[in-house]
Image (cartoon, rainbow, N blue to C red; front, top):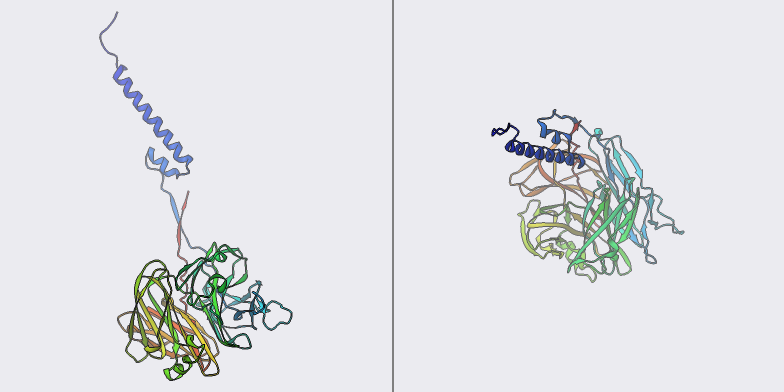
Length: 476
């Protein structure tokens, strides 16, 4: 018998069950897709409700040894070849305990005193120290006086980095600038070099894809990257591992060598720069020398570059015991600018630079007599907060210059003694060769000036690298 009653599994319930089955199938397919894409199982399980909590463990990575790379012999280029030439060993001064000194294994630098074009016997060195042994600092120094190079060369031993900015030198007639690239790791480094000059960025095909083998040094002539350039700035970048880059600058006036300087890298572009550790002699000394033919580069200048944007920079020249002087300069993006500073005073000086766009900067100063001169390039210093060490090489009268960038006077501890540093100014103290300690709870910049009547160079004081922090690892 037929009935007009619609059963419970009629059309409406059938449609509902069909929709439910389709949605469930789509959710299952979506979950399978998430797993196939490698997403965490906990996310997939969340579709069925809250999954079990994932445990995490705090892990402190093993702290690597501290490492510094020293400059090795001062460099120039031989007159008869493109080979880099070094002259005798440099002397390392180390501030730290439990240190190990390891020479770079491979270099192409020729010994300037060898009659057989042999490679230098004492290449650059790596200074290392267990991280628990305290602060580490080191410096290299060398005084040369021969037919090819003369002057004082000093440099702080540097921390390897994947980016280095080098501001200084030139490649005009009688001026040599050698670029040293050192890879202290056991992995090859692939290096690119960007160059800027007075008229803007310089296309330098020879600066691309430079291979620096493990534990080796390569030396390039900056003239091959930027020929006849009065105002070069270089940026060195390394893929994969940190390297150490430095410029070795030497002067030849007529038939005589007359000046030498080694400059390490400085921090990347920023809107506030501080340069310290510089010294300029009195006008009665420098004026007559600048007036001689071929000595136009004897005076003090600051070199500036804004790599990316047009900007206006305010340069404050600070001298001990004198009111600061201010200069305003407009910078065109990508064009280097050399600004004369001789009229702003002499003695130990510092530059505080503020700009609306990031810049890099260095200062060049000189000392000397009618018979002999020397030159120094001092770059922008890194900021120091906390405790650090520095190593003073022998080679001349040494003074440390401390710059306070803030608006209030501060007190800095130097070897346990308090030194007051005025706001937006500097304080200097004599220091003896060897290791020293510096501590400040507020921001400060520091640099060393070494000079005599006919020798000058500078050393940057570097902060102690921060220790690695802990990380949290999920345990499944």
